[in-house]
Length: 216
Image (cartoon, rainbow, N blue to C red; front, side):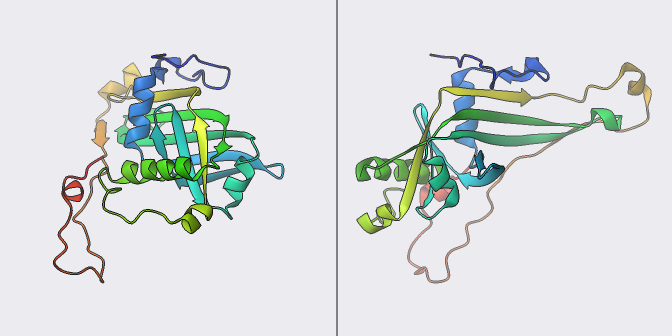
């Protein structure tokens, strides 16, 4: 399907015109982001944990230590909410009330499933690695069986999701447009700086092309 069907949990009610249910747009936001926030209930209390992620097709993967409380809790099949937000700019209005931000965000609901098969876990770890730096997987040492056993990987199906997007200039009250106050948008973007070689890296090892070209 090209669009997500809005549900009671994913339907955007506050400023509904900003709601986006197009699957391709949701996936573009996920693929550009690097960090998600995972929300769940543990011992009757809400918990939100930031972590890395990767997407392959209609599945989102998160991973970490087998000792992770978050991963152990989610592997029991409880509801989880995952969010990703990209901040594109500060919207500076003429009034404090209309100050805002330009952003693209995604909210995902579902149940996580723990991957048990070593081959599936290995494929998911490749997804994580390639999400961070495309081309990196072929350079690095592959995980050992012991490392795979020490790693928990959870798969979350992308069945229930939506995006919310704000773009454009500030929207002031008509009477405020005559105020002598600067208004507009301050664009923001995540830009990589120059790579910093590890202190124990031999000098003859060059920076890979995929690092030189890195951008989000």
